[in-house]
Image (cartoon, rainbow, N blue to C red; front, side):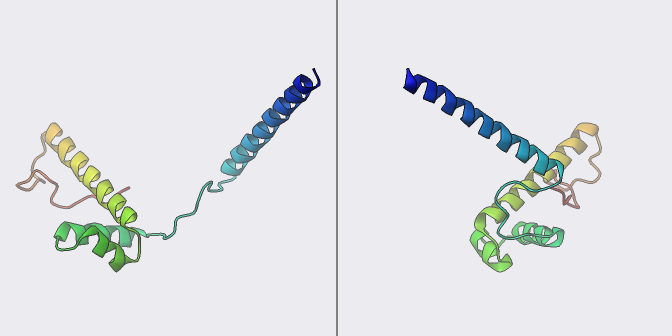
Length: 116
């Protein structure tokens, strides 16, 4: 019986701790704090654009681009993937809307969109 009571008290205490932590996280987010591990390298817009342009030109592997721009291979992969999705979205929306004047032979926009 003693163990049952102690177990119930421990469970109650645990739920109180969890609720306090969640309240603190909500408060921190409301104040604009970034929760989680900080990025190893911050890439400004120009660097992100340069990574995509270097990849689009060809001739360099993802690893070579990572070394060249001083970041990780995963970061380069994310930048390439984001730009591929943006280009695909832009091309498909132009085709669906009937505006193909800004498309090249591969049905990709002539001037790529650089957004996240």
